[in-house]
Each structure stands twice: as structure tokens, then as C-alpha cells.
Image (cartoon, rainbow, N blue to C red):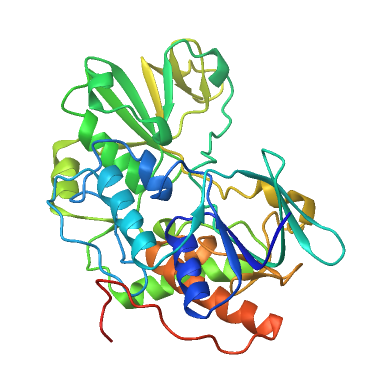
Length: 366
């Protein structure tokens, strides 16, 4: 059984930020990741997502995102950047290691891997993100639909939609981006959302960002399931999005009430026939949930349905810190959360200040 003061599960943006600060402070730690290589969820983004269309990238601590051509696929650029970062700062990530449960043995926390390996720790930084848990909302009849159904996670590219009648479901930035991609090739499309989209025709300032994060943080502090930061900030009216709205591509309809073999239906007034739309493909851009099933044995969830948080630490067990969760789900928030979690864990463990900052080949001079 491997043992360390701190175990990090996940090596995406939040996990690498934590790993950097653990190494900087000389903290005994092990970093695990379920992926085959560096990059976290970026390894799986759809191939048409480029550095020009990606929704915000923040550099990892003490580093800079390299300058890249706008049309470079994000699923190539970001994993390469993460790989260079791991090498530059000597961050040893053990992969692929999938943790299926974390238990409390009365003194230590123990993480049990899918292959039977075990890791014992005094504190845990969980950075497993959301990509592994796509959210498919339940609507009556969904299992009866005879056409194709994809989630954002499995988006195959616009070619698969050529000549098809498509329903795009969801009100987030992914739905907007994918709608713009497939609109030129589909036979017809509908866009449906549960709530009217909120379009924001203003610059996204740091003040707005902090206000949005504060709203999400308040929810998790009360033990409620987090809302995404994007759901709080609204959808930005970029020139491309403005043009798509004016052309009718982003014409929104309310959510349907059920699904049958060949399409979707809206419940009409009592005594009237339902309104329907026949479709070949349903594209569910309905977001993700935090991938935390492996923490279930710790019973961290409360009556509110979420995990009550105080900063990055869970209220039920202060040894467990969640980074990249709730208010730290953005790349900016993930960086800060990694730093905060390490500082608080070192204080809890009574560790003295470490040896100082590791310098990389391309470190930012402060």
C-alpha cells in the first residue's frame, strides 16, 4: 500500500495546480490520474473545438499558455501544454489509475483503485472534474426514440448531421457553439431550452467573474448542488453569436414534454392535439455533474443534495478538499483552489513552510 501525506486524484487544471503547490512546499504527495496521458478532459474535446472557439483558457501556475494558431484543435494543444508543464516542474503523475472508492479506516483515508491497488493518505485533494459524468435528463419516451442520440461529450463533428433533422437541447455555451457548427449542413433544426437564454451584451470583467463565483460559492456553502459559473454569467453576445441570432439559427423554443419513436412533443392545451417535431437526431447539450461517486463511502452529501463546503474543504470531513468543484470549476478558479487547498491542508497537518518555488524553463517572473 502506497502512503503519503496528501493524495491528489485527477490531473487536469485543478489537479496540476494542486500538484504544483504541493511540490513547491515540499509536501509528501502522490498524484493519480485516470487518463492514458496528460490533458485531462481536454483529450476528449470534439475535434472542431479550436483555440479560437474554446471558452476561456487560463495558464497553469507559474507558466504561460504557448502562443498557438487560432485553428489548432484544443484537444491537441492543451494536452501538449499540460504534458510540457508536468515535465517542466517535475510533477510525477501516476496513470492510468482509476479510483473506485475512498474510505475512512478510522485513522487514515484509503483510496482503492480499480486494479486493487490501495493508497493511504492523511488528506485528499479530489480533482476529478465532470467530464466522466455527462448529464442526461429524463424525459418520458427517451428510450423509445429510434433515431440517434448524442451528448456533447460524444459529439462526432458536423458531418454526422448533414441532411438530418436535429433537435439541440440545452441552453449553455456548448449548445450555442455546436448549433453554429451544424446549422449549415442540417436539413432543419430546432433549439430547445428549459429557460429563456440570458444574452449578455457587455464585456466580461473580473468584477462580473467574482460576482458569479460568489453566487456559486454561496450555494455550495449551504450544501446545495452547484450551478455552473456560465449559468450565472449568461451567454456572451460575440459577433458570431449575434450573427447567428439575426439569421435565425439561434431561435429558441421552450422545452418539449415528451419523446416518441420519431420525434419530440409539446403538451398542448387540454383537449387539443400535441404539437410535435419529427427528428433524426437529438443532441443533448445538457451539461455534466461532478464525478464524485468514488467518494460515496465518506457520506459527504447532505440533505440539500450537495456537499456543504467551506472554501475547498468539505464540512463533513475537513481532510477532504474538492478542487475544480462548484466555484472552482472554471480554469481561473481551479488554479486558485489548488493553492488554497494545499495551504489549508498543510496548516491542518501542522507542516512547516516548505523549500520554496520550483522554477521551470519558462516560468513567469513575478
